Image (cartoon, rainbow, N blue to C red; front, side, top):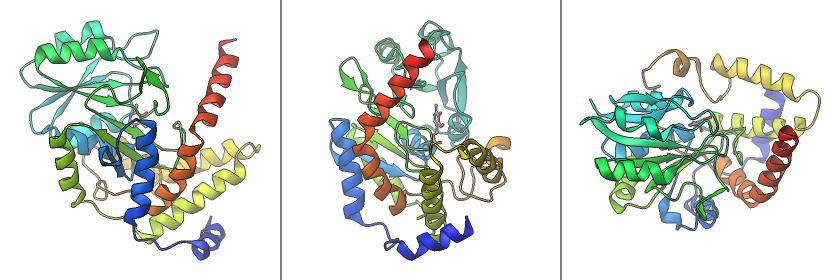
Length: 296
Ligand SMILES: Cc1ncc(COP(=O)(O)O)c(C=O)c1O
């Protein structure tokens, strides 16, 4: 990885985030979501988008957020970092998504948000979730980390509720290595997300060189027999915090917010993301054909 990092360092473009690049990436995402670039916010990881959205919805100390019992550990983490409590609801065996019949019994005066998670590209029953939310005066936030590019009820996934977040981590519908973004329609949430951006740290030069090198290695190894061996090594190194990873050890074993958690998206991710979004149909078609083979 060291030699590759050096090779890529030579070809690196300036590392300061250019507003044009951010605009172009946000526009490419927005076009797919039938939204405007102003509705899109970019982050170092998807979990940061979740944290920012919850904070913008005023979720804090003592509040409760309803989440599916089958989710990623970083989801309850983001809620705990805000001083709120994740409340688990069991899932439906057929869809791996939240069982809507079990939601209401978990609602109490402290409940603020229901997280509607799309699991493995299967949308949750968003209509039923929104009805429950309306009845109980709650907000709905879509966890669309697995769902970019698909549709629910004739609308792009992640655009039915007032806000959603997406991931562009390694195995998501399109990948920027790691990365994430938020979508919001409510002007109040948009304005709070903008304010919050001022507190974010920028990715370091080292972060960007490392990420760019890892993307290059992945492209090199894709479809080769060494791929899974490399993935195994990468997971081990990232858990130890030796390379940029999806989740460091402290996120898996602790509930304290890591010091560098509130990080903005880097130019490396934006640059790579623009090309990736352009190929989303190709990626989804490939996933559909693989899913068909599994089904058979
Ligand atoms: C359901 C779900 N929510 C949230 C996330 C967090 O996304 P990220 O890894 O980009 O922070 C993941 C990541 O795999 C996920 O599977």
